[in-house]
Image (cartoon, rainbow, N blue to C red; front, side, top):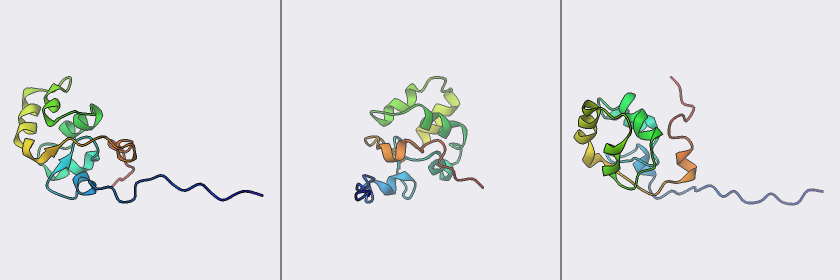
Length: 103
């Protein structure tokens, strides 16, 4: 006889869900690489560097990404006001680079 299943611990009502790509502001610590598609010049190269080099304490940390070129930094600067750095959530960080969505 097997006992009842333990309750799931996933966050169902994540308060910052809009910052994962559904609003004009993107959470640089939790949003998936595809959230950057709506920012011309970000996807795939700059967005890939952002999602693979976090977490970030602040948006200013983006400019410390190893190997970031001056051209890429200029792209980031263009969208600086559209970024926010929230606390990394394990439920979202795991899928930042590859969430299994393909064309």
